[in-house]
Image (cartoon, rainbow, N blue to C red):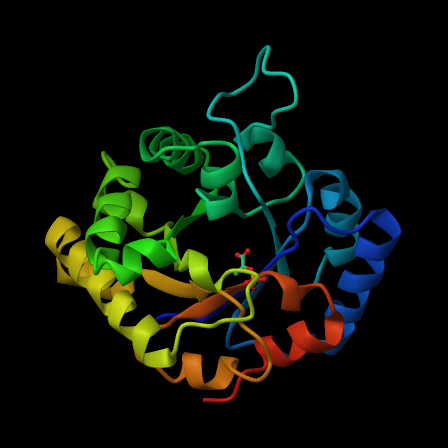
Length: 251
Ligand code: PEP
């Protein structure tokens, strides 16, 4: 049984006061939820006060990125141990905005996945194709390459900690969601790739979550699909009311 993971990616939004107010509201509204995992990924500057506010709650904390080194002269960067130190359990890696604006390539993301697993943090590995790639019928080849290269060297044991987020770029922040059928097809394809790499048991146990304009109005239909195991939510995770409704999806 795969426990659904409902994750909010706050990106570069919210100062300390707003962040604490948001998680306080989430904490109160979601206290009774026990059958799904709830995660928020705020910006680095608010991780500590958010962790303090969430102490003892059923909401987990994640970072949005790391640099693949323990420590050192890497101005402006944050290491996996720093995320652990502040109470993070998860970290988003390879988000399309990092691939696009910071030119992150699969080989570099793979180094991050490796180091994160060494530190018992759980990577949420983002993969997804552009609109041009989909229109050219290349979406499966693109996503398959990303999955294989970002997971190179990861063992079956390591895979127990990995979550994959399928986020078609044309659906991120655009208001245009993949249909449940489009998302299911790709999730099933990713599971088949994992089966080839790690065998059926690991493939069945790995959570594959969907991201791309998930909202209260479409989450139920998406979550009804058999291979969609949760959501990575950007814009709609910034307001308590919408994120609460998303977490409380009905199947
Ligand atoms: C994201 O950034 O991971 C995302 C899916 O954003 P949005 O929900 O705003 O499309």
